[in-house]
Length: 102
Image 1 (cartoon, rainbow, N blue to C red):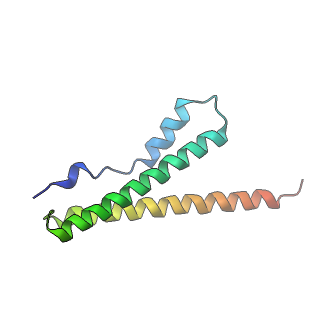
Image 2 (cartoon, rainbow, N blue to C red):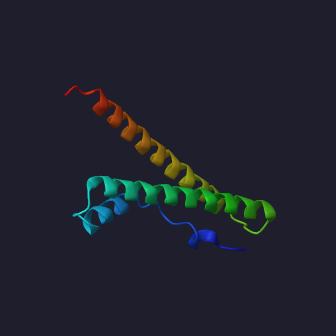
Image 3 (cartoon, one colour):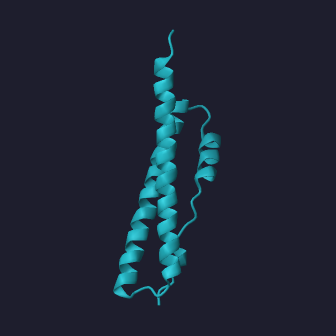
């Protein structure tokens, strides 16, 4: 019935990293990283919301294609996993820096 392909956007983490680095090189690295992480968290959250909505629409019979629903779910899962992995790496790096003796 409804073709939801137009709602599903590809995950563009790498493009976002490159565009933020080019936009404002005069800002501090902390501001760029904070902005980047906030954007990625928002994007992952949006993908999860879209996936939940598509699942609900499929259950209600508004969407015929289980493939679109599964693709949306996998994109949301990948976005959340990537965001979590980046968070873990950042925390690990921070802990390592804090253990350094000056």
